[in-house]
Length: 150
Image 1 (tube, rainbow, N blue to C red):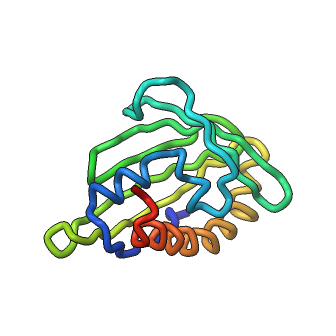
Image 2: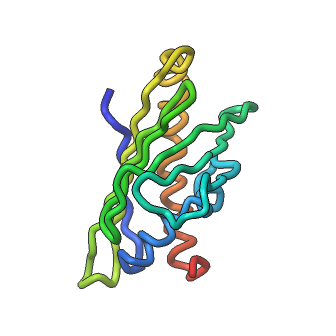
């Protein structure tokens, strides 16, 4: 199946958008299903960094470990799930608009199912993400454009 991709224009610089969206501690602020995030290790976020993300899907909570695969400020990042039955693969791209005054953010999500996850991905996860992702991007846009994000 193809990745789920959503794009939104945000009236903030690529550096501002990148800084906020790649800080995993902000996920629960703008992603409806994100309950909590815990950094694994003390070092600054870099390729190889890992975070434990707990998400709510229906009445259940699931925690998975995500690892940073690419981090190219302020244009692109890629994180990949490395454990659990459903492993997300997230890529983000930021294009500058209006001489860098605004940004076009594109998020692309795909999933690998392992064990029970093979059934969960098409039946539960993908439909849920298709509904949530546009709302999450609008929430992110609102936070960044209000100036509430640094």
